[in-house]
Image (cartoon, rainbow, N blue to C red; front, side, top):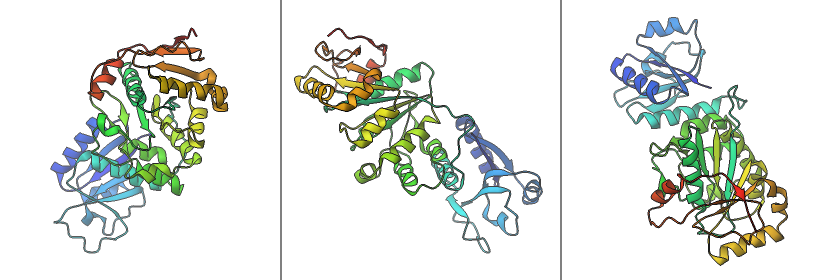
Length: 342
């Protein structure tokens, strides 16, 4: 799905710059047109319809904008808004294009129907989990995501830990994923459209991601229903969805397990982590339901022979305090599972 956007303003230089940036960086999600004259806009709207419009405020007076689903005013300090309706969405004209696009998608998501896109991707979903902290779960998730991106897949990394380690790997200059949580909670708007707008892409790895929540409670109040809707929406805009889970095993975790195509169960050489995983395997009925799709990730050169899991992926121990360097090194390894010889 692409938003059909018209930029309508007499500021030709700004319109051209904005159009060029959108066409270069957002061609897969935004289809851009430019209108440089008010009379031409009036004529155009008698025959064409647009999903959204970036408008010069003075052009809206007496203009029939019903063919535009979401009219947005691009405003600056010099604009005279006399007679302009206060009901219009207003965005600051001179700001980073990425921020402008994020706001566009956020507002459009609120007014668009939450239907299925005709090009829905239905991603393969891989959940990365461990009952033990410090085993390298996030590093494994990042390595696998980067590996898939290198193979040409569109990959989205979704961190659902209570306290996100995302800033270690990604720039946090962008709209928080809390905007998605709020829309899920209110059950209004198109979550998938919002995700397209606020999701960022790491240039170095090629992995798409979300900026961390505004605060801890935003993640903590997600319901099982919210989790299901979130995974469904994310699966519709990517080829591979990699979920970095918290170490808990509550109802939300169980929902993620059920909805995933594969579960990467991560351990390291420490006896404590292997003891916790063994307890999960032997004493938890959740494992019985997900056993067929579970792959044990033996991280940091762990020896998983004593763990009764059929499939295993062995990863080496990378000696570095740089988390980004570790996941990049691990992304060069094979993630094809082998039979575990217990």
